[in-house]
Length: 490
Ligand SMILES: *[C@@H]1O[C@H](CO)[C@@H](O)[C@H](O)[C@H]1NC(C)=O
Ligand SMILES: *[C@@H]1O[C@H](CO)[C@@H](O)[C@H](O)[C@H]1NC(C)=O
Ligand SMILES: *[C@@H]1O[C@H](CO)[C@@H](O)[C@H](O)[C@H]1NC(C)=O
Ligand SMILES: *[C@@H]1O[C@H](CO)[C@@H](O)[C@H](O)[C@H]1NC(C)=O
Ligand SMILES: *[C@@H]1O[C@H](CO)[C@@H](O)[C@H](O)[C@H]1NC(C)=O
Ligand SMILES: *[C@@H]1O[C@H](CO)[C@@H](O)[C@H](O)[C@H]1NC(C)=O
Ligand SMILES: *[C@@H]1O[C@H](CO)[C@@H](O)[C@H](O)[C@H]1NC(C)=O
Ligand SMILES: *[C@@H]1O[C@H](CO)[C@@H](O)[C@H](O)[C@H]1NC(C)=O
Image 1 (cartoon, rainbow, N blue to C red):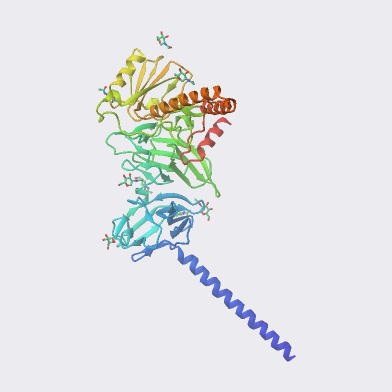
Image 2: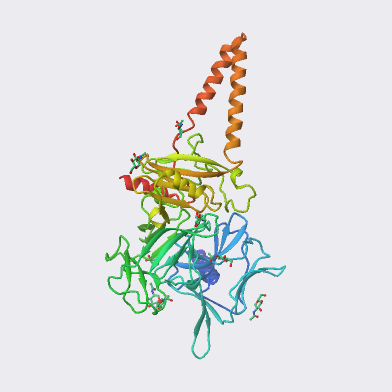
């Protein structure tokens, strides 16, 4: 009996111990997990990146737990400050640091009225330059700094400093722009349109896609202030002037369909503008401004040629296309600052080519291709000219040559300047190598061991000739590019 009572007691003690341990453990654990990501930050808040974290480190969550302000690890050792969509780790906003900070415990984010990222050498990488009391992340993904006076007010918000993304309900106004992550493309508003612009390294941006307001429900009225754009939760990109009626509706696939997923619009690194909705487990493509890959600003890189449904090659048919490099190196500027204009470029001509977004390009009407070429030839800010014999339109290209589109009509002719020292030298060298190889082959043929070497040489030259073959579109960090092609075809 005694023994039994003792063992029952021991059992009870063990259970009690286990239970206490369990309570302690869970309470500490929930404390840690809840405490790690606050729902608001007050003055005095400080954080440094955790060396153990490999992807991102949440600092502040919204009330739904869908979004987080976080340190984001980039290029293994560097740090960015981002608002992330947690289920997908997709970044919706990035602080525009003067330069990337390092992922080390010397880098600090603190809130002293301003949200500041700095390191001990008192390099301030970024600051909101505010005098606020509270940092909050709204359930729209908007990061706000609020002042808690009698009437609490918002003194700073990330929605006013978009990166490459516009989320639903966020306004894109006339003084803002979306900029693609590689810095090449931007989306801006005009008087009654939104436009996509490319920075091709000349003095001014080239517009490559323009959507003018239809003004079906309301008109753009002069003097009524600038328009703004917003992704509406009903599934469209709207343009508004003032008042609730949109001056334009650009419908997504989900327009008027009760999808109820969170919407976002992003200017992609390939220059396309795409809309997505969150279907609960993945981002579904809902809209794209440019559906034909060849109509993108530069799908095959500089001096590339895009053939719809086929892929990329080079404008110069003697140069092979490789998806990881340009046909000719990327250029910037023009020919105006160089001394002897005539001698610092050579000319590449190609028939059956046209500009991708020629509706957006200026043209003059000339009576012959020769007249068109002469307009460009002696104009130092001109990089190329395209002439359409059918219409007589002469398009002048005032930025370094990008990708052209193949046209079935061989009377569409192109004239392109290539900066001296580019391509030609390489080819001259190639020709020289061929001579040498040819001579060598002849000598060897005469010689006794000729047959074998000759075979090798022949195989080598055959391989070289075979190089001129089409390649895939350039992968500009967007894996979805090829899938558009496929979905278009299917
Ligand atoms: C917050 O810190 C920054 C950087 O050290 C400093 O420039 C700023 O004056 C501080 N703001 C306030 C309100 O103390
Ligand atoms: C987001 O917050 C707003 C107001 O703070 C609230 O009306 C809305 O229901 C919230 N939405 C979600 C999905 O929690
Ligand atoms: C970041 O700041 C720089 C310099 O102020 C500016 O040129 C650039 O456009 C900004 N980038 C974005 C995405 O706003
Ligand atoms: C967008 O602009 C409209 C009209 O100016 C305004 O009512 C609305 O509050 C703005 N939305 C946000 C998130 O700032
Ligand atoms: C937010 O979270 C809720 C539930 O946790 C989920 O149903 C919803 O899809 C999420 N929204 C986004 C945009 O992730
Ligand atoms: C390359 O183009 C030139 C001029 O358009 C043409 O004469 C030549 O036959 C082409 N060469 C090849 C290998 O296609
Ligand atoms: C030179 O070409 C540029 C565009 O390439 C054009 O804007 C300019 O008017 C031209 N200048 C002359 C003198 O024709
Ligand atoms: C160009 O157009 C003219 C008249 O419109 C025509 O006579 C000529 O044959 C065309 N040239 C080519 C190469 O198509």
